[in-house]
Amino acid sequence: MRMIDFWVVRKGEDTQKVTPEIADAISEHPDNQKCMFCSDAHEIGGMIAFRWMPGASIYTARICANCMKHSDEKLAEMAQEKVFPDRVAEIEEHMRRYMKPDGFCLECGKPANQHHPVGPITVTISTPDEDEPPHEFCEWRCFAKWAAEQAGSTFVSEQS
Ligand SMILES: [Zn+2]
Ligand SMILES: [Zn+2]
Image (cartoon, rainbow, N blue to C red; front, side, top):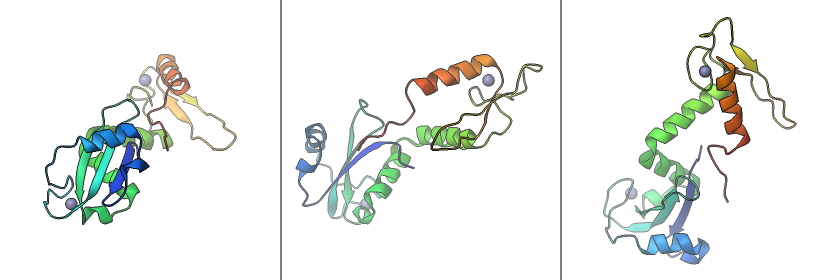
């Protein structure tokens, strides 16, 4: 699952294909010849640029011709795994628990029945296009916090 904003400029491609902001970041990349993924200094296959989310700082990296054989999507996943492993693990853990209630509060991660006789609070959300699994919370404050987050911004913002 891709979570980051990601751009690829393969060798021979024009930086016109990316936004001026990204093209600038790429052109300012220090001229070291190592591939970000394999640390190999052989033939350069192009540049990648990425950021955790819109507004976050932009990372740029050189990729060798060999690693560039991967698809854009695969490269994006490789970059996020390499640079943001903790955040990726956190979100994957969250998504896993989100999709499958495991008896722990979705918000605080403590047992959903820790405040017995209050809780577990089970919430089922109906949406027209998707069946969401029920979510469990230990108390109303946790539910309220979670609900506020849902109403505001989400973890991942899609940008194409
Ligand atoms: Zn490489
Ligand atoms: Zn809780």
